[in-house]
Length: 209
Figure 1 (spheres, rainbow, N blue to C red):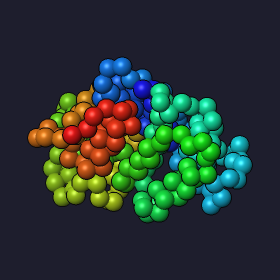
Figure 2: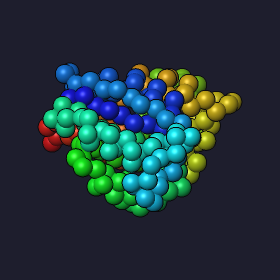
Figure 3: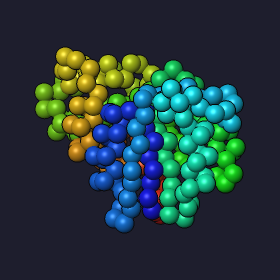
Figure 4: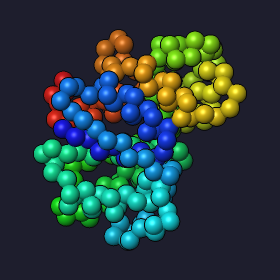
């Protein structure tokens, strides 16, 4: 199966490139398409997108229609990965599904919303943080509730002791170490991450227990 992975920007692209090649079983391939930020989903999914707006959600309805016409669901699948930020997850997902329902034919799509940001996936894997950032101070996440809305990337920055925001650099450092286990004692602590792993395997047509 070939996966077409749509992400918000450079950091998500770096993470997916480094992690997916380790996670996906042999025989699958993928391409990651980055955008200029999250963007905003139009209330009218049939509206022609403003070409000056290059965010993922800005372009999503048009890209879904194009994928529906150009991709073979037997060999190609689509993953849409966005951060929740301040958007209510259920409402955002319903609106993305509504955009998909306007496609004739429809591509085979998995929508996934990271709560609150993809840095929550990192915080769910202390062992990977330790390998990527040996100087990390885990006491700074002692009161962290996994997948909570708390300023996730700022917390990750404090944990690793970074002096500046460098999400691309963090992704490049974490991608080779972020675990691929989504069940069992070595599973990531992020329920959202584990559900994403399960969803990706199903998207690729792999059996999931």
